[in-house]
Amino acid sequence: VADLYRQPSLLELAEDEVYQGFVMQEYQTEKKRADQERLAKEQAQQRLEQLAAKLRELGIDPTTI
Image 1 (cartoon, one colour):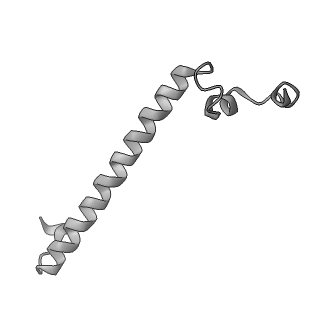
Image 2: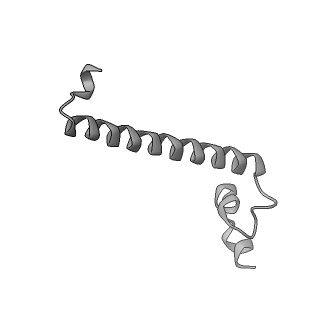
């Protein structure tokens, strides 16, 4: 009942677990895909940083490879 008076935006409803099954499902799917892509990029960047650090430990400048 409170939501009827408050009238949350569609984005708010799409993020609310009560309404997720009914509101902006395409948006939710695309947001989930984008979040997964962002996470994969962050993990790849962390891995690159770890490998660069390892190369530096071995006395190799990673920018010359």
